[in-house]
Length: 209
Image (tube, rainbow, N blue to C red; front, side, top):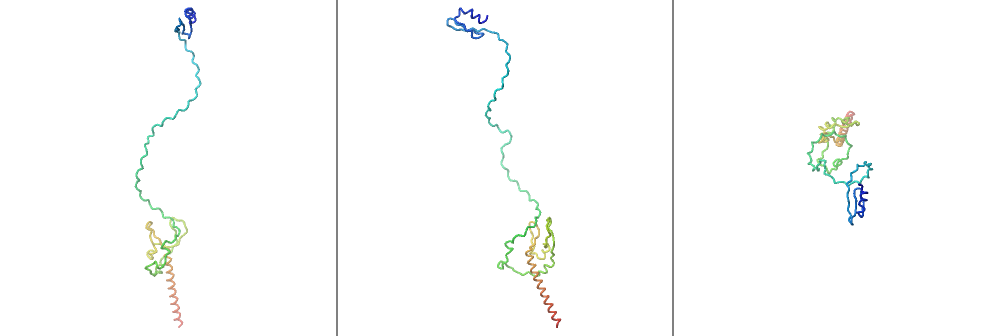
């Protein structure tokens, strides 16, 4: 029996009837309201509706805390001790000859008051006559030919004008001092020439007698 017909049947006995839902009847007897539940068979499910549009993207959440270092690298250690110094390398090639420098503190000093053991240079012609002069080039240098002496030639004759470099073991010639010896040699030659002239004059006078 439908809910509507049931309401008409009980209408004369029930002061008020209110059909709340299809399976619920509300009635009032003597001022008391009650509900009657009617079991109704469940109908088939309706067709699934269409999927709605995607909603707007939500706000980006807060950044989480940084995780532990997973690189596997530990903290930097202390600097190790300094290693031993390696052996000295070979000596490099001798550089080109530099320009003539200024005289040192002793080079230009010639005052008599600061000198001692003063002796004249003797036999300069004998010392100079066997010394050969040369044209030459320094090895590993592409320059014009030089003019000078060989230190090994001067060493046995005028050793005071030859020195040796302890680092390179090469000989060096004091060309300034050699000029002084040359001047003395010219003076000796002049004296000899003068004596020869006097001797010739004497012999010519003897021939005139």
